[in-house]
Length: 113
Length: 114
Image 1 (tube, rainbow over the protein chains, first blue to last red):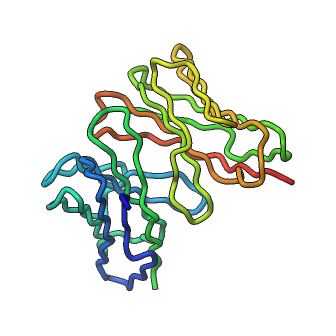
Image 2 (cartoon, rainbow over the protein chains, first blue to last red; image 1 turned 60 degrees about the vertical axis):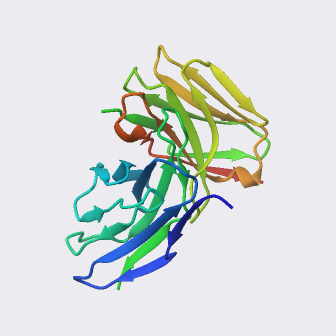
């Protein structure tokens, strides 16, 4: 069954701790994205990647880092520099061609302990 | 960069009535406009999309219209049902958007009252 898998579903972070959210896709999509969604709000772009070993900052990249060592994987690290990390994090992917919809994973809900 | 505004932010309708959500975009080069539905705690799911070479597209009770001159597009839901209650997001992208990025509107919370 093709799709995007995010793990874990729920994650708790202690003060000063870095945590990594996993995103894996088996859709053979070139582009991958990370969004942050706060309660009752829209989607804000954190980072995106068009090809392996390349990624770009989105609108709210501060306090986050990513890597793209494999086409199917795009992990997001929430660093201790992100002072307000509590949010719903969504990973998405789509083919490189213009005008292709993004497909989303089920999300990871991150909270501070 | 592109800016997408979405109205209204909340919409309450009686079951069986129609619901209309409007979005405006700023970049005239934008040529792809998807709509997503997000139920509480779930992932956004694509419900319909339209490209700039088309003025209207329908899929059962859902339709989207695009006015390129005015730079706005709308989602129409007819014969609303309780399961239509969700948050709806519009988005836009254009050919030169780095990484094929989508710019999302702020969302509309739709409540269908039985």
